[in-house]
Length: 143
Image (cartoon, rainbow, N blue to C red; front, side, top):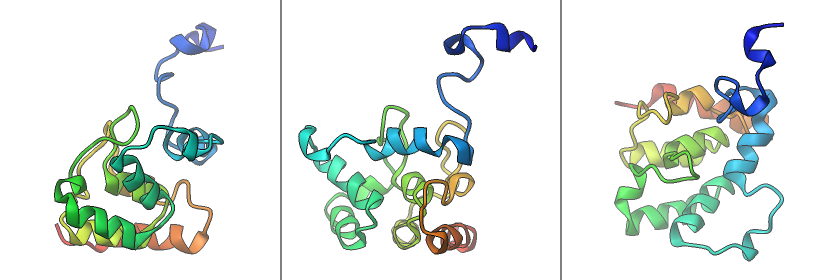
């Protein structure tokens, strides 16, 4: 047994943030997707609505929010771990939202805890087509 395995789970290296892999998609979805809690029961801010629009692939709502709040494209706020809109859209495989954010000037190389949006493209996507399209959208964008 490795020395780190003898430590209690919460004291193991990297235990505060699960590894970024398909087997931890449930944790990421719960953290960034409100898990099984009904969203209506939570206090909601306009930024929460923006997040939900990204998560639910509501391109028109995302576009409307960005038109009113252009800095939202660059702001790290989603969840306690501070993620950008592009990171979240990429994570959920929302290729149309990814393209919109890139067109509006989102930085595809802006890292969130050392991870780029391209590194998580489609991790939580249930649609294989969306997952497949998110990665090329990030690779082919200008910038």
